[in-house]
Image (cartoon, rainbow, N blue to C red):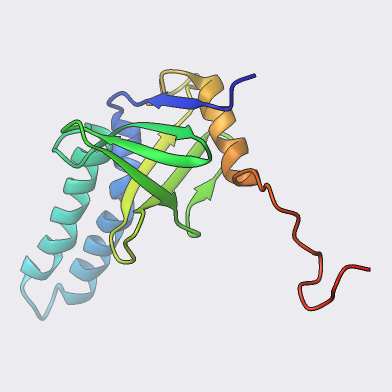
Length: 162
């Protein structure tokens, strides 16, 4: 059995709404908190960020939109809309569920840059944005278990094996 995982993403408005929802909630909170006293222009910045996430994640628009993910030799690679393939590492604050995978991918060798990706499995109410559900299942398993380890690590690092 091959350990290669290939995922191709398709545009999905539901994935875009899920990616933009935190920014929309921030915009609504700022607008409600500042309504009587300040200009509503303060809420425009998070609203613009939410729309950007919707277009990038849900519509797969823009050169930095992730249109594919693959795992080769225990390394995750993201294929961007402009054709670039970046080696990435899933951030610890990524979330994995049975029908939803919310990834924050960090390009290898960087510390500050994060690329958000929302993967939705097809269901009755939503077609999802993953073309191969079995590959999504394999990716979820790989993310939970992590890459293969070739060296044996001791259970307690400060003790020598006997």
